[in-house]
Length: 448
Ligand code: PMP
Image (cartoon, rainbow, N blue to C red):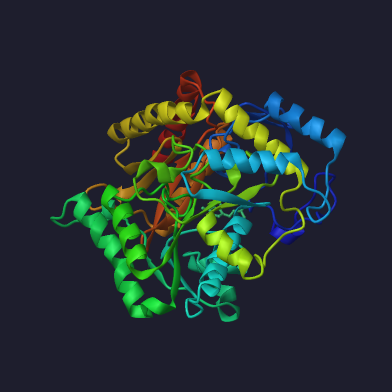
């Protein structure tokens, strides 16, 4: 049935119109890495929702912290009251960054976190006499959110097309898909070549007009966990410094431990100026996101009259109490370490699938942000025909078998199928066996 004829759970026409194309069962309950439907079926949440539930479902310490906060005060507006939870969460968040990154602005999701970074960058430029800087360079493919500002830097034409006429389109450069290149260069040389596309784009736009560059340090759903060659990160930083361009890392998906470091930025010596966090930061318990910013950028903005930005729910006590407990559990259970260890194990197991399935062209990612790419031919990395809908079929075949994974058809400048396997960071080796058994069965069915 078409979307607008969908029947709701009570059999009457549904008043919701934002659900998936496929009919999905009603959710009943969730615990750890598992999630049950009301019809009794059990699923492994192999994508942590949309790479959200980093600490797993139903964590009792987080639930208790939320209950305690709810009994005290669920909401107190920040212009009327300060709250301990937001103060403590800000302090804890800053502990995970580096010296100088000491200011936090809370929001309710990833798009809002990205908007906050874009607006902070702009207000900093205006406050420091650089009002000519308005352009934010980003990459394609990339996903940075669905609000109009975040969408303007999202390199995903299908999503932005209806809106381009009503927003300022931002310049894009290719994501560093060095693994696809068939040339004589080393990976490190390719990394520099992709970074130098930023230099070229800044020159094309005119350096005085460029405000910022935004990227996912480890790609999310859009690129299928794309990691650039190491040389890329340092060169991007150098180029931004040379031209006074603010470097924004969108760590909405890669942050909060998922890549085996609390921030993906920590994998390389280069550091961004602004960071957007969400998803795993609230781990699905509450809508929560954050911008982390250096005092050297925040102070001029405050002195020039304040940060012109804000959301009613920003820094509310319930979201912050939950976020604080999430970070506490990440620490207590060493989930960043577990993401690194289990990520290595899972990546080795996924790589092992390449012996069995010639249509797996690449396995990539860091920690538990992992993806496999499906191709027609591994040597040429030729994509599968679009009509096959391999990205969709693999998800459906896994779903029927009780495993939830996440997929997209976006790769570099062309289309291509990939799927992500990103279980919660509490996953155990036995559970990885369980995931791999279903995945093998799924890929057998896909090959058939
Ligand atoms: N940035 C990245 C890298 C994301 O993966 C997402 C969500 N998929 C967003 C931003 C937007 O976050 P939200 O959906 O919470 O607004």
